[in-house]
Amino acid sequence: QVQLVESGGGLVQPGGSLRLSCAASGSFFGVHAMGWYRQAPGKQRELVATITRGGSTNYADSVKGRFTISRDNAKNTVYLQMNSLKPEDTALYYCNADVQARWDSPPVNFWGQGTQVTVSS
Image (cartoon, rainbow, N blue to C red; front, side, top):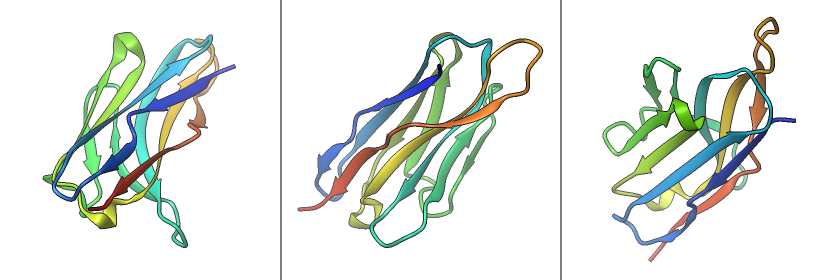
């Protein structure tokens, strides 16, 4: 069974930085697109950033220039470097990935359990 295990959340002051990590574990053939989403209380889950296996990235307008997504394909891990954090970045951050179980099977989408990021003074 595939699991996405997130780490790196916490409490940070406005203007501070955090780095989130998410590793895919289990038995599988490969990991395709990976990304980060977030959900603030009372709001819908929204895209933060995505990255393809080849390294192409996509960002929400609200985080462009402040957040950087990257990945290590050898470790099946995706990272989110978050700089210049604002109180409105406070949310539960979820990792997402398309994982291919076998060479002849289509990718299946998986979610992590979420890691809390709180930006407050």
